[in-house]
Image 1 (cartoon, rainbow, N blue to C red):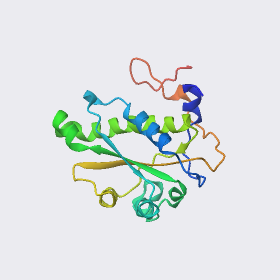
Image 2: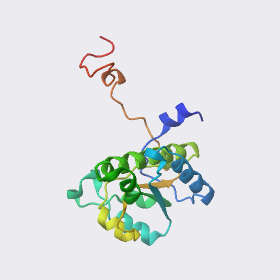
Image 3: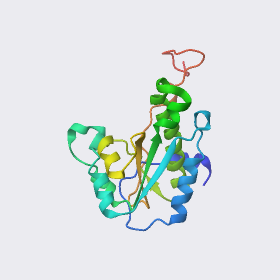
Image 4: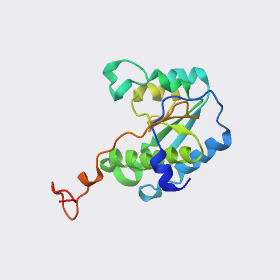
Length: 189
């Protein structure tokens, strides 16, 4: 599979087969994430790999559907994935280098680049995942025993897909590209 195919094949998968994902594949995904660019090469990410069913249950219980905490409903579909990877950001690393002002943007920008590499790497390896960011940070931090200067950024359920995926429609790229300055005029006009 080439890069173009990998990018176009990636989907947010919410059904997984009960098939174990090898340690070798997990390490490859982690290495893809670790290869991401970061401001000043500070690499503020750390990974927590979870296979334990009890811990996975506690993690799922911190999530909420539709990134809407008010729903009160956890994302139960996640539990079918054989392994979770929680990507955390080290706030102190960013703050020491760039200060408080840049902390909020850089911690998310850097770890998001890391997560995208992991999502694409999973597809390359024949696996599936989903970028989960709808969770209660304080509760998840408690479940994972995170030090106060670490922040959970994303939960990635990883596994073999158990669903047929169809491409969801995207906004026509002609409607979102601008040259030189922002303009409401479309490229095709």
